[in-house]
Amino acid sequence: MKKFLIIAIAAIAVSVSSCNSNKSKVTSADSIVSDSVSKATMVFESSVYNFGKITEGDKVAYDFKFKNTGTDPLIISNATASCGCTVPDYPHEPIAPGASAAIKVVFDSTGKSGMQNKQVMITSNAVNASTELFLKGEVQSLNK
Image 1 (cartoon, rainbow, N blue to C red):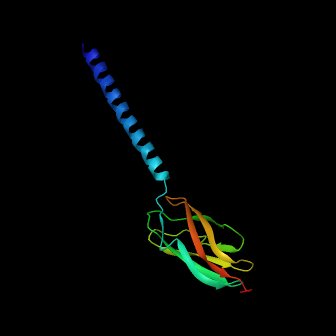
Image 2 (spheres, rainbow, N blue to C red):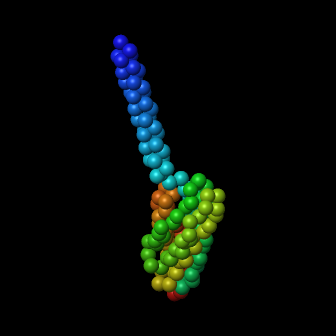
């Protein structure tokens, strides 16, 4: 009888400890999933810059200022423009949580005329991995 009681208690102890270890595995798996999701957030003062009217051949430069309002460092991996006349320059070092920075975009209007709408696509580790910025305005031809 004593042997049966000892075996029963041992079996209960093993099953309780295995249930607890399964719970900790689920919890740690959940934390791994949540830890792998970026918590960097890129918030721009403005995503559109209207440069107004310029003369063909003028260059327009604008700094799109932003802040990392997230809890992880923000890493910009790429910035591309819709055409070769627009060149973005972005910070290559991580932007700490709470820190601000800027993406400088230069538009060269040489050979352009009329209304312009240039797009710059930013790729980062932010919650919204892709962000679009725009330069808009009118280029007046030299012939006018």
